[in-house]
Structures are given as structure tokens and as C-alpha cells.
Length: 83
Length: 160
Image (cartoon, rainbow over all chains, first blue to last red; front, side):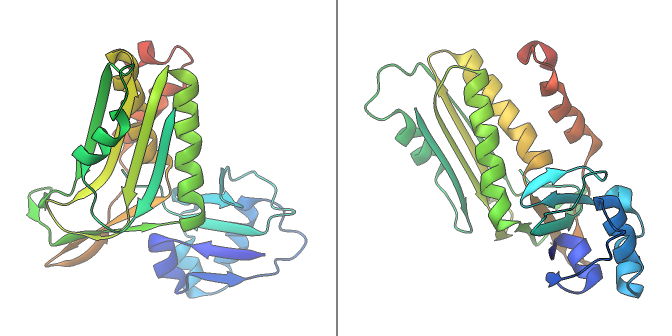
């Protein structure tokens, strides 16, 4: 699946997007964040406070308990500050 | 019913957009125009610019979804939403919401609803550029509270 990062999540991870293949045990958005946090120092820093990160699957807002099966694109970003 | 949603890096003309919504029509009795402008200072500190990052594929879809919701909740005759992205300097426009209806109540309520949702649900992130460096703007609890009041199905009453 494709992951996209925005704002400070992007800066901390050090890339705007990437392709990943999480293990089958990773089934929800919250679990995906936990798994990403274990992938290295940058990721640990980016995902250290999962409650302050929002997610979207295929361009729709989702909650942490949303199942990721079938997702093509998952985005992680801070709470929005537009307008 | 005229609906326009536009994301762009260029500046826009709020007056021209409002005029375009009512041109040649005699059924519209109320137009509300809200323009969000880049301030020259944040918390008393002067800023050089704001940079707005956005999620290109999602921002337009998300704004359009809320425009559709506004149209379902109020008898609107026209809606225009323009949101800029990229680097914006103090005094420049950031966002525009124009709502048109036969009476003012619907136009005011729909404009406020759309702004509250743009602040908290549209995938944009503001970064402040000042002489001390660049910092991401933190989301405000007050904005979340402003958006939450519209979740009450009675709509306008909940906002008062």
C-alpha cells in the first residue's frame, strides 16, 4: 500500500510518500501507526504521539480503529489548520 | 444552483467572485462573503509569510462534500469556495466563502458552517515563517468546538 505524509509528520519521517508491506498482523490504522513507529528513529519520532496524528484512507477521514484491508492509499497528518 | 470549489496558489478577487454569483439573477436576496486574510503577526510576533500545504486529491473532494451538505441543510442559490495553497504573505487572501440565498439567515448560517468545517476538516496545514524560523500552526480547540456545534441536527439553533 502507498503511504503519504503531510506537514510535520512528513518532515519527521523524512519523505513525502512510500510503498510499504506491513505484516498481516497489522489490521487497523492504530496498529499501522504502531508498526511504522518501530521502523527506525525518524518513524519513532513522527509517531511518538499517535493521538495527535489524523489519518485518511483513499482520501476520506478515518478513525484509528478503522480496518486497513483493501486500502490503496493511507495518509497521516497533524490535525488540520486550514481556512 | 451555481457551485464553485477551487484550489489555487494565485490570489483571488473576493468582490468579483461575489458579483459573479449574482450576475443576471433577481431571485437572490442575500449574499454573504467571508474572506480569510493572512495577518502580519501571530501572538504578537511579526511573521514573514504563511505556507499552506494541502493534500491535493483529498482537499477538493472534502470541501465539495461539505458544500453539498450545506446545500442540503439550507435553501442556497449559489456557493463559491476558494482556498489558496503555497506561500501567502501578510495582507493577501487565504480563503473565500460566498453563499447566496433568497434571505440572509441561510446565507449567514451556511457561510459560518462552511468556514468552521474548512478550519477543522479540510486537509490543509499552515506553517508560519518568521525571523526565528518556520513553525507549524497548532490546531485550536476553539475551532473544533465551533465545528462540533453543527453536528446537532437542529443546525442554526445549536450555534446560538
